Image 1 (cartoon, rainbow, N blue to C red):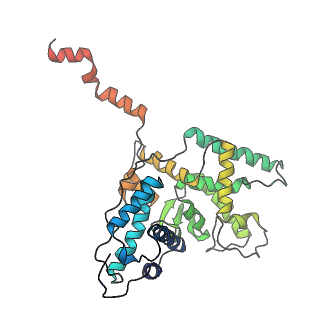
Image 2: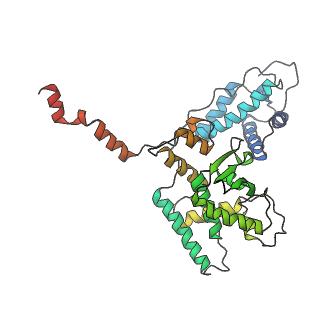
Image 3: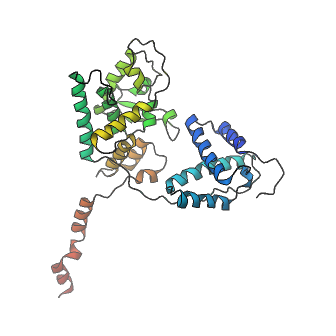
Length: 339
């Protein structure tokens, strides 16, 4: 326990509020900080203030997370980064009496789990399922029957954008009408939806432009303005009068769609699997361009982009056979040794 009593010890709530005031974070980010702090407070018990926490206490928490709760190293690292940032800001601003950050240096090495992607066969199955749904919808076979996969044209546009841009779901839901620049063949990903809190552009390739044109037209028909969310399911399925007031897009329709799509396909389909597939395909391309992929994905570190490199066993085998044939061919060995 820290014995420096030069000032009153700050409470967890006070430290959080000061951190939020100084950092100006998004509501979702503030919620994640509160969640991590509350989990830690439950572990150490009430009455323990930030100045009382030592590195040994944090190490006990780590053992509890990894050995008792069986959480992954990635989950632990996320908690440590949150807590370490709180202490770093609190110590730097003189809000805490402690002189050492108890969470510093306790990041665990990543487990190196393979990214969950969609195979070529699975991708075909996804689109066949949705195209069959679109045909049934056009034929009027689904009229009056609620289904999470409808309207099919809307969800096909969602899939195309995720597949051909690699953007995160949060970025898709934050896309505004004014962010779509079809004449310039670009899409602007705004900072509000970005994990790295910055803005950048991605190409609007031909495969997404037709769907985006239709979605833009439908959104405007229903009263959407330039600053309104484009992928707003409630607006698209609502009245065409354009007089309704809509808030932020809800996550529930997206969750319901991917849950039903996964059931119909017989395997897990999620927005992030499209992102992982996009990145893996680009990083395993013979013409791989690391800076390009890093820029498209919006990664702040090259090491994050490098995680998407996967070894193709067939290509690896062919390379080994070709490059090492001199050392594995018996006759060539005999010629070299004169035997």
